[in-house]
Length: 253
Image 1 (spheres, rainbow, N blue to C red):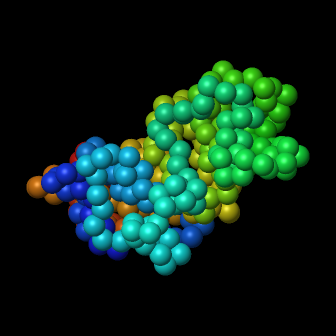
Image 2: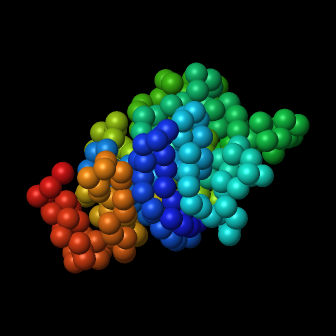
């Protein structure tokens, strides 16, 4: 994916200004920066989740395989099938574990044969490192799982429709340290098949888990802007911008 001079507005307010950002295939890109600088707004632009806010609009382009996902003839639902999303707090449906994973698959193919659906559910739960923990309770509610298991269930639900890109908006902020490490380890496995973008306030997590890092700050007009983008090791050891150095070292933000 690629953002080209992308600005995101809520009514007359510009929340994110003029971001040009390459998203490298099958790598993990972390978006960091102080609260309110537009990290989640930028992330949600990559699968048109901001469309759900009536006043939101995007100027510039966001390209997926060379096509602008904001072109007038592009279906936002089709974009979200290719660019899945996992949210800050686990949000499993109040349905059995099996139906949580199968939900999106059934929407796309209501007549899918049961054996094929069974295989997709198992494959997705294995892909989310959850199968061994839930294989004997697929008929139990997804909301009965622990917080970390619920988040992995949401990841299984997202990958069941075989997206190209997976967006994660602070996926570990509501989890304990052990569950957080499991999600970080899972991301390393998932990047073998998916391009991943993650928003995090946790500098240690960004340094551990990502290959590339985007540093965002808020301008005087309150619009968020990207001030630096590079390989994660470079951002955390030798950033070009003094503001990045101050932020990642804890002297700012």
